[in-house]
Image (tube, rainbow, N blue to C red; front, side, top):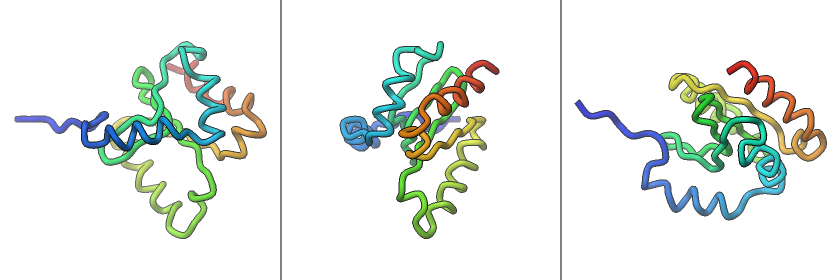
Length: 121
């Protein structure tokens, strides 16, 4: 019996590279604060999980962090996010979502929320 590879599949490599090379300002701001184990665990950015690419992922904690910009409030986007989150949770992953405004206007509050989860591990 073979198991399907779902993490960072090679077919997603060009998409992940493009996204990593074109981080949004909120993604850059959060990445600057969570990279290099600044919270005690390693995060990866623009990480592939099956057909999705998540903004940030911590394998050690099975934690996905998503930043929601304006596109997440367009028609149908919230339904898509709910399906995506449910899929992540079906894999045993926890999803934390923050808005771009949260990151830009209250980065310390965002970090406190992430650290609360990191501290529970």
